[in-house]
Amino acid sequence: MAMTEKRRVLYRQGSGFWRMTAKWVLVFGALYLLDGGLLRSWGDALVWPMIGILLWVPFGIGVVWYPRKDQRVELTARELRVRRKRLPMERVNLLHVARLWLEGRSTADDRPVLEWTRSDRVVWVPLRDGRAFGVEFRDPAAFAKVFGAFAVAACGGPDIVRARAAAETYPDPLPMRRRPADDAGSWLDLLDIFN
Image (cartoon, rainbow, N blue to C red; front, side, top):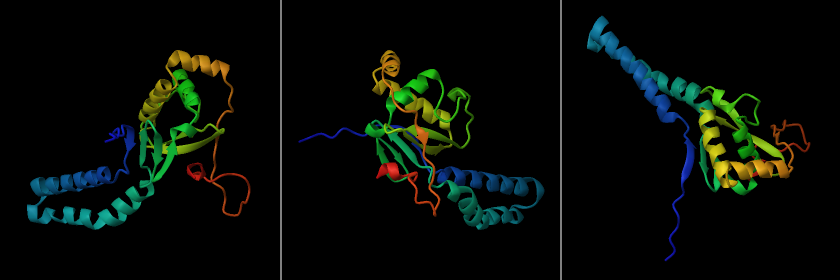
């Protein structure tokens, strides 16, 4: 009987739904405790949980969470999964990722990765064919650290990466842009790389 190796997840970013819901409960729960314990009676303070429940769907889900619902990302040794799409590692230019990680920079700009703040930011993933696509992260430095270390290990270590980067030539990855609806040109859609 063949044993299948368990898939090891190197990095995972969820949609943030439960984190957003927990913050919502924390804010309105604190208002309830503050109002009921210090200002008015507990019965009068019940208005805060009721307001929280009534506003949770249109504002909590609709305004806060829904615009970011597609930020689900999972990185394994075999593939990068963005939303429901999968990108095999064979199509990613890991040598370029490893070289940039050893230099402490990224394809997005010349700012060192370790100086990135924890905020929504697009990280460009370079492909072997010279293209690059952007993936949005809430903590881009954490993903860059994991992805860079994985790329260096997959390429054989820092010394091999530096030797290969000096010997091999490949085009600098160009970010893909979304094609306007009326444009029939050659620019590929952001997720065409998964097809």
